Amino acid sequence: MSKKVLIISSSPRRGSNSDALCDEFMRGAVDAGHEVEKVALRDVTVNPCRGCGACSFHALPCPQRDDAPSIVRRMVEADVIVMGTPVYFYSMSAQMKALIDRTCGPYTEMRGKEFYVIATAAEEDEWIMGRVMTGFQGFFDCLEEPVVRGTLFCGGVTHVGDIEGNGALDEAYQMGRQV
Image (tube, rainbow, N blue to C red; front, side, top):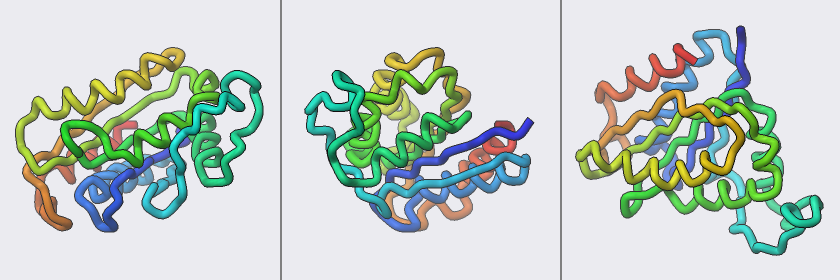
């Protein structure tokens, strides 16, 4: 059965290593027959949440005029959400965190979503993914019946292109095929 897959790439760098993994995941999911959309947060505007309460306390649309409401709506409509991030100070990128914070009102509509988390870092230690997942887990814990289907960490990649030839690219493709 075909699923609606939304890939959110949060690297601020075009052609980044985490973006390359997202592209391979996308290629695998497309080859498996799924409907796939990728959003690169560097190409849109997502302002930080202002905490005004319009969405969460008053069920009103967010008063900010940026791209976040459209992306959040696509998250609500997706069956599968892939969250790709470079690692900064052992956590997700600021761009990803800003988007997560903007789900404040509609997050209650994200029931039964399947998630994949993809992360890249300069350091190679696998424990880094646990630190990254701690941040994401705070988001997942607020959702109704989320399922983390997979995580992928690729360390030792600092500069754009460092990931070329890395086995993590094939892992991302295979993960996408198995959605």
